[in-house]
Length: 247
Image (cartoon, rainbow, N blue to C red; front, top):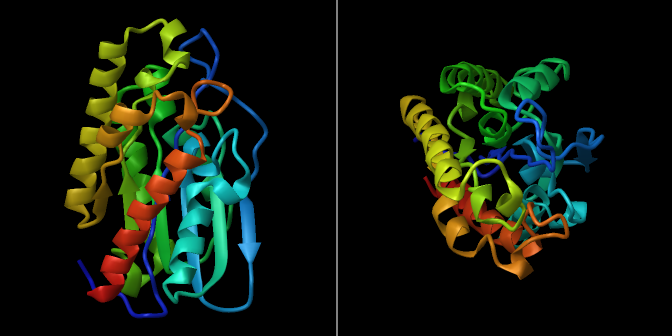
């Protein structure tokens, strides 16, 4: 993995997932009118977080979402941030995220670090793995262009949390073991593409299966994580970025 200069960090938020209380498999699990969030200052690292409801922190305050928690944690470590851009919306599939990114008119070398978390709505809507793989690759290639030649590896691919452990899933059409099997299949694609492109793959799924269903770790919809979970994810992403800076 390529080294990162102090002024150029890495991240992904590809952290991207959503869920919805719909009974139809071709509809998002939960949908709202989220729009891209931008926080700009004057100088420092530029961080792009791509995803779905998991990236925006559905049901939580913006400052409790993992992209902004990552910023807060790294600033305590001495890193400065100048720009954070979140492109994510509850209910988005990889294809819908791709469409949104293509409409943003982002230039090359616009960001230093990025994260990508997407795919839960592909699984929920019964979209194929082949379609997801194609769109994931496109998202990787486009995001690497935003990072520029010197920061191509500064993208973190984040695994999809297993919403089958939540209270929301108790009323889902699919049984928990089927949801788990499908989530594992999508995560295998993400991990494989991360390996092919020499990117860091962050597995948050295993630990989430152990604690994600606890009441304190869910917001009121019974589906999305609370700030306690986002804080754990942010800590792991922070460690990835720090590791990149150290090399």
